[in-house]
Image: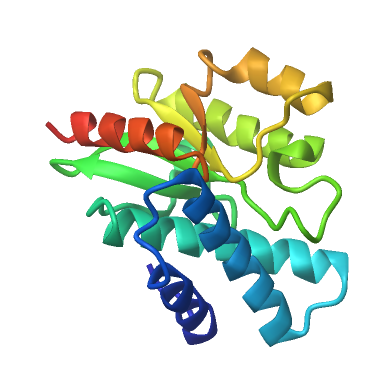
Length: 193
């Protein structure tokens, strides 16, 4: 994954502060990445903040998976048959023997700078579920995960999540929850066997 130097410096700095083996440390890692990015780029408006913190979540997630768990995820995967091209590519995929073993959509953002971060925002939830639907139309038996740092507990987004999980989305994974992240990593490792 091509991570720009300004993002990478922030990620590496925060990654090196902890061994990231608890939910508290994972939360701190992602939240500090968001906070440092907003400060360093002097981001003040919602649209820029949403876009940049979404990018930061993707980069930090990829870096965490590669460096802590030694899982090599491919990024920005174009799947023309699923209409996943030209900016609508699959965020991540895990490959085994040149075949896609699972699809992953990343939907995270800064909870400190928004009232409805990540999957609390219904439009974000809808986009993630739509990506899952597109993917599953082409790869119906291949697992699809949505990773986030914020899961809804009530409201329309929680309802949509409940409807989609176990159907077009195999699992919504809060990567700041150490147990959920560990279980997810084990599922990915199992897919590579």
